[in-house]
Amino acid sequence: ATPTAIMVGTGLGARRGVLFKNAMALEASAHIDTVVMDKTGTLTKGEPEVTDVIATGIDEDRLLALVAAVERESEHPLAQAIVTEAERRGVLVLRAEDFDSVPGHGALATVDGQRVVVGNRRLMERDSIDLGELAARREELAEGGRTAVVVAVDGRAAGLVGMADAPRETAGAAVAELQRLGAEVVMLTGDNEATARRIGSLLGVTAVIAEVLPGDKSAKVAELQAQGRKVAMVGDGVNDAPALAQADVGIAIGAGTDVAIETADLVLMRSDPLDVAVALQIGRGTVRKMR
Ligand code: ADP
Ligand code: MG
Image 1: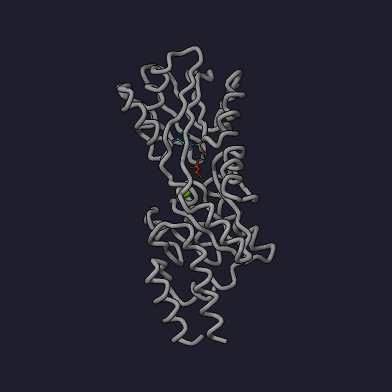
Image 2: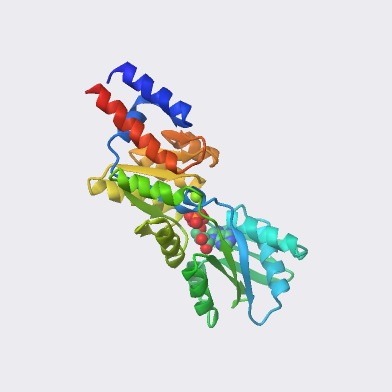
């Protein structure tokens, strides 16, 4: 490797807000054929907003008040969205006791004497909670690209909260550009299958790996590598860090968590997914000059 080519590539990247941490990151970027992208906060803005509150057998504001009390104790982005909506409606009034979070699944607590569980389908299955008529509503929300969490109160499915997280402006263009460069784009997310597929199809991503537990993202990257692929992983979250470390090139969104930024081989300072393509092109240009 000629030091000059490395310096030029690194400098070129830096000017465009693409920070390669070392020469190896730059060289590895030249050989990437698969780009795995986290959904929430990477392809999307990671700022979900509540779009639907559906209550059955309970007053809608009461349902939201119970859920918000639980979510006030959680640090998940979905929790934040629910708390914001409860504040907006003036129902952020209750306090939770015995809070517990189940990573990749949801959260639970006792609120106002009632046992409140909020989370995904898997969490409801664990507690043998039958969704009943809410199953179809949940499916509808998911088909529309909404993330829907289920709320159980005292062991009964009592409602749904639907949330939307808008794609980043350039997400679709980034996918198209990476594909033009010959890379396969794969979406990797903990969100539910139908929601992920819907967002994927909006953005032109056909390979979607959904409902992945936080601890399993790196194993999914390793599986792709075992097929002989050279994998770049793009992510922003704490739960993306092991996958960033596992990938041939770990790429962090600049607006992401410190852990992701520290673990990554390169950082996109502008948090623009299109810069993933810029990084691959700079890598290719550098390696060409070295030959
Ligand atoms: P993502 O990869 O989308 O950030 P996570 O692995 O953190 O997802 O969580 C996966 C799913 O678990 C979420 O889509 C949601 O359905 C559920 N979940 C996790 N934490 C919470 C929470 N605090 N409140 C409600 N649902 C949650
Ligand atoms: Mg994320």
